[in-house]
Length: 194
Image (cartoon, rainbow, N blue to C red; front, top):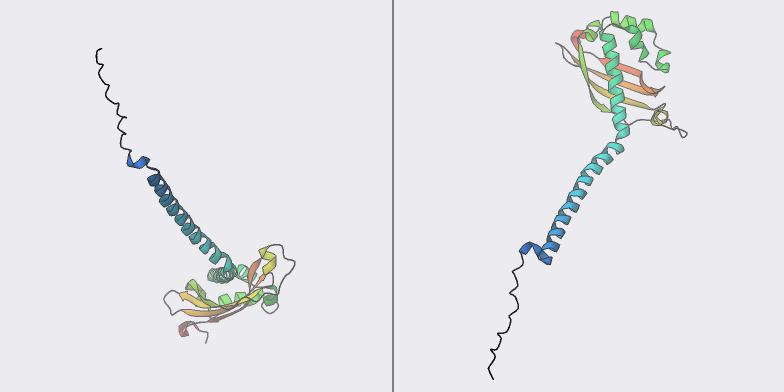
């Protein structure tokens, strides 16, 4: 009998080292870190967006109040600057028109304050009082809800070549826009009527 050679035991193939990025724990940890960063980023950006949106909507009435008062006075003073009495008169409310006529506005343009209107360059709102609303429970939109609202503003009128003037205006929201109810201008001494 011939001896048969004893086969050498077959060794199992040596496992190839796994690449680190294929390890389950590395994949899980990577997903967790990237997911956390994404969630934190989404929360932070939505907080920034929602915070500014909240500030915008919570102060919407005050913003409308400031913008409405600014534009009505600025429009009025521009009309007076160009000597357009009819346009300036159109910025007065119905209640104010009962005590002021178109002739009064024309007399103001041609009168001692004419220099004030000629050197007008702009306005700045320095403050306002809270809006007083008459309350419109059946309002279907913002314009209807504001109807009859009154507010008061104080500010500065910039005059080219002169000291600044100051003003106080009471505005009322009627027929969908702000109108002048009362206007009080305090002019520098050089421009004051004698």
